[in-house]
Length: 287
Image (cartoon, rainbow, N blue to C red):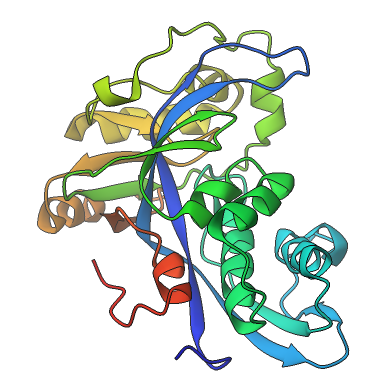
């Protein structure tokens, strides 16, 4: 049985491709993408409070507590379930902000998953996903917990089983505001939609990449270096870029060749979010 003493993972995600297939009247952009999790990310820990207060013990610089996604996630779960429980949240942050790896969304999803279990509020995955969508478009996939072909604004899922792979992820020294990319008049918004069952690993591109590279030349520079190893692309709205390798030694060899001034990490691709498995009480959460 999971206890309040456990650490909870909040893994990174990659967008293996990302197409913008239109724009709605409300300004939102229908997307198609494939989400994959990584065995690298943030870590959260929770301490119960009997007074109903939500306290973040590790605030992020420049982010007020009432705007932090971890705090907002706990508050929304409180509201949805009318629980009187409170919590203190501690976050070990490894994923870059504005990096396109879903760090804040993953943190929020792990809060929902963990507290739903620790508070014994017993919401279903679908109910948690609906709360997650109020917090951000990427939160539901982390709650859903399986690698998926996603559509809509990223909340409609078709599960996919992906081949084992390792990734070298580079972290350019810039933070990209997602809204800035989607507001650009140069963004491609009319890529033809594809059928989920027809997507194959390695196909597709990232429609946000050209705009991000034009605004942030460091992203383009990192992509140029990474493409010596084959196909490389940006994740989400950036800034992080990645290349896929069939095994760990090849990925680590590429990482060892990084020029001075470039930062990155190697991680294995996961088809399941380990936080979902932990919330379900699965004892062995390794892939």
